[in-house]
Length: 178
Image 1: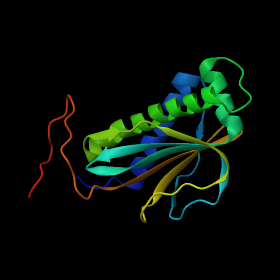
Image 2: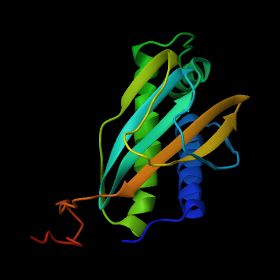
Image 3: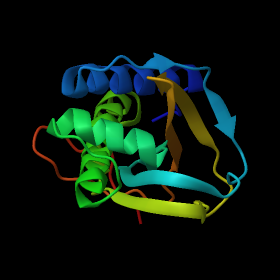
């Protein structure tokens, strides 16, 4: 499989994010200008949720937002007022990551072949940095809703040693060679 171009990747991310926000939260979210992040971001604060992608292409999907926006998302999803980050907020952000990156994965499979998705890991705090091993670049799609910023990031690279994935509904599209 060939690489996916950045414009197509951005469209897949934007569509998935807008659909999940509209369907699950009843919220409008506006797309900003996508960009490429080549170096780890400066230390930040807020909520970051990461999920792994695996197949012929491997990588990570990520959602990043402020604690205040994470609380607002939680309040909309659970229909209860939430004003501090706790277990419910972290669970909701994990589920939003699962839905958004899951929809992105489905859109990418058309171009990159079958992919698996890990369970999300959510981090909340101040003055922390996230980094992926290697020199991979992140495709970043910023969004704004209710004057709050959300970033959806994807980092993908060809798998060095592809393994056939056995999943219902997918044929083996490649095989191992000795």
